[in-house]
Amino acid sequence: MSAQDFKPVMHPAGFDEPLARILGEVRTGHWFSMAELLAASSGDSKLRCTRIALLAQVAAGSNAADEWVAERPGHPDAVAMAARVAVERACKAAANGVPQARNLGQRAGELCAEAAALAPGDPVPYLGRLALAAGFHEHIEGPASCPVPGPWHAFRDLWRIDPANREGCHRMLGAVGGSTGPSPAAAQLFASSIVSSVGLSGRSPLQLLPLYALVIAYEYRKNQRDGLAHLLWSTDAARTEMARGWNWFNASTQEDWLVVDLSHLAHALVVGGRSDLAADVFDALGPYGSNRPWTMISATGDAVEEFVRARTTALSAAARRSDPRGRQRAGP
Image 1 (cartoon, one colour):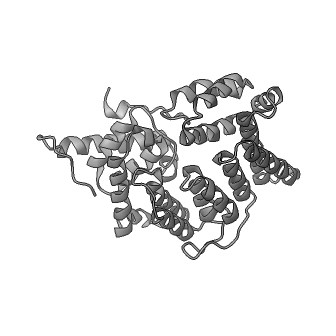
Image 2 (cartoon, one colour):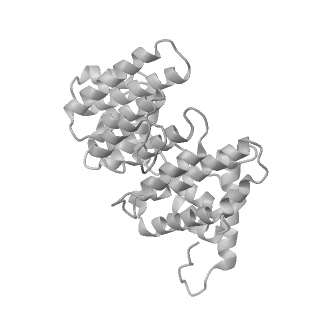
Image 3 (tube, helix red, strand yellow):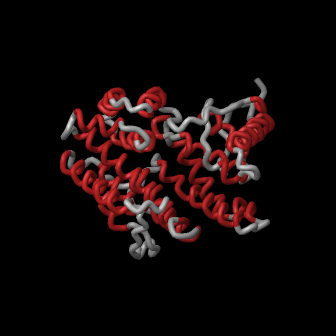
């Protein structure tokens, strides 16, 4: 199969095949496989958080979580999932201007509090509170290191429980960068403050947060019909973040990877002129792809077409520039 004929698997579960296998059941209202999957994830907080976030999005459209908590009242996983589902529904109602949104938000907050009481130290209820605060546009001024408005009370509570939580930082990025209007500068300042945090691991996927902020800035300039928006990727700041992302990629392992993170890094390397390096990231992606950031940067909005074009460019560049002695290529 030629590179141009490649079609990525654009599944929200990405590399997590056990999660992908049960989403159909959850969508139709069955909860038992969901309970088994979360029980199997109990020793890995990062994996559990990632799985619950996607399960909640799917379960919000069914009665799976409601049936589970009715069958197993007081079970920490059941209540945590019910809380995240309630948050999803409340935030969707708020976004659509549904009159009952505030009542739904209050109930979701109560479930988050119940889940936190059942499992002290579990970040999931605090992620729910942060999602609620962001969804209902709670804005207070940030700290001196990042003086931009956002749901900082909920974010600080989460940080105390689980410092550098990936979902939490990405929710904050979205909240400060565009919840009440596009603010690329605020998004970039927040991302910079996170990667400058004392003790942030070089293997943390948050090392890529500034690349997400750059996509926000690009999308804003593109929507303003700025014909020079593409030059954003050739700045010194962009090259610095590409180098940071490349260093993260080489320091991390498959356990640290999410498809959407690798996609942002691959995109940045391609548009930043290092398609040969992007080839390694596309190799790590294997058959998988994600809608973001390809939808935002595509002229037509076709994520698959843009992904395949970038991948083909990267593989061709790698073939031209490969070192026959097998030495690792220099970073950006």
